[in-house]
Amino acid sequence: MIKFLFSFLICFSFICNGNNSFSDVDSLIEKKQFLDAWKLLSSKESKSNKEQINIKKIDMCLKYFTKSISHQAFAFTNLKPDENIIQKRNLAETKLIPTFPFKIDVIIDSLIRENPENYNLYKSKGDYYYDIFILFGKDWIINKQEVLRRMYTAYKKADENGKNDYISLYALGYFHNLNSETNKAINYFKRSVSLDSNYAPTHYNMAYIYTELDSNNLALKHALSAYGKYKYITYKNNACQMAGSILGKLERHNEAVSVLLDCDRLIPSTYQTYYYLLNSFLKLNKTKEALLTANNMFSLDWKSHTINTDIIEFFIKTNHLTELISFYQTKLKNEKFDMEFRGHIQLHIAQAYSLVNEDKYKVKYINEAKESFTACYDKSHPIFRVLNKMIK
Image (cartoon, rainbow, N blue to C red; front, side, top):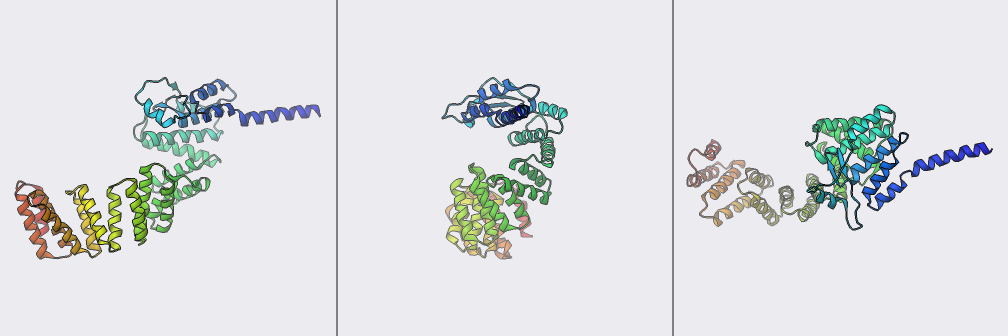
């Protein structure tokens, strides 16, 4: 009985130590004492626990570094209560601070060779290459495609053996989406969402895929989720624009306008927001708002063929030719002397008449554009070839 109790206590002690072996390290991390946590973790390493210690070290390197040298060496800092790691990283970019060499790729491959059945090692390896892909893109030691391949191979092996989380499943889905393997991508994304429904990138990518599949109601659900969950304004704005465009496709234009105006408050004066707004305003016959939006688009770059073509096509498709011509005629009335500007406006009016097969007015404005451009361009300028092609 005593022998059994002694054995039980040893086993119980081992289990407890295994579960709490990093409690002191985690306590330091919670207090943002990252340098002290790293040093304490390093002091714990022995032959018997090196796999567990190095997995924890990798996790620290990816989450809590102050400075990274190509993810081959890392610096850590003890922060004050009011400091955050992002601020420290920004400051560290221009400073020389001591780093700890820690070549994760070499270390993890060595550990896997020693114990290929520890699938937590594969999961850590995937985490490492995923982080490199996010932070470095094309600018790492090996090319982007090889980084993605290593990430995928490691995460796949880990997942096949029950080691995954919402990020690894998202990354596997992202990889399949890049390779146009839509069904596989969706399956991984669904599994990722089932583990953590608050991870915005998964929702955003699901929205993108469902848009490509013309499953617009599903796409809208995930686009709105991504919009609500993203914290960074740029990503939030992208998700917002996607939601607005999908609402437009679903002919829910009042809702689209509401969402897109939110986009314009997040990041004012972006072309994509104006593009989708113009479509919805015209579909709702809100010509005053449509003309204001068209003017905002035009003001971004009045010479842009793409911008003006989009404006023209939206107005024509929604049977607003009269308002479109008036829009450009006002530009001509307000600018009497800049012949380059007038030439472009006359060209765009000719474009509009061409789309509705009004050849008489098309030719009239082509000839006026030629006159305007002759005053500011040499006869060899390519714009004259464009105008001559339009007459034919």
